[in-house]
Image (cartoon, rainbow, N blue to C red):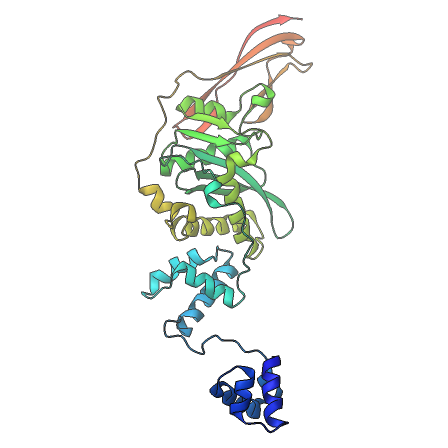
Length: 373
């Protein structure tokens, strides 16, 4: 700005010619003439630095298309869906032939303050993604917590295909029990086929290994020939896909009106699962939807099932009312066998069967060898 100030003062205060001032300042006479004309029009503002950006660009994105990008961004964000450049381009390409590239959409969003660029972190090439080769080769399952409108706590049980990220089940319960896990598993398998393996964390409804036992899900998977896998304790990254699914699900639910009942919440979950599976492009799937990825390849299947049922054996004493205590469908049951057996020791064996391959149940207990203690 010092040079511009020198030129203006030399011409207007000292009365020197444009040619002399241009020669003394080392600039062209045409530049001096433009500066003088700008000073007469704008005054002191003419001496401030100005952008060299052109006023127009022949290949710039049309304002109407930019408005469409911003409107779709607001619409997706208000609905709780992913609103990144990849998702915006996917939806625009369904209705417009002139949909801009992902990079152009990102620049439009940045220019209008819709996104904040993050500092560069680890390069993507340094990440190792473990993924099943085929659909149904491995499922992941976990449940997460949510609240109804009256602050009642509920739990949402999810099943996800490791290869295609297809949301197999997304069901709400007040408390997820072992029987709920198995029933939901069978409903998902009825529509999509049984998987070759299932990966979960170490929740009590999934595994009894930490208690040196076996829960209903483990017995059912063993009967069906499905390999059960559990993650390392306190290492949620092993089940990273279903954990990331929880984040996407909660972002959607957070934008919806709070559900007044479990049925209302289930309706929201069903709506989300339909959109997630059939309409939302997934970046890990190269822009495919989970439904497309699930149908693109032949599905894996479990090995030959084990036909031998799992037995649970209980040793106890007949109580003072002549009753024995057994666990049936995750609840303690007291069965009267007569006061004659009070104080006797007994051994009860329960074997697991299935009815129609759908709802697991325990057969009637067989009480053997009662004896006086």
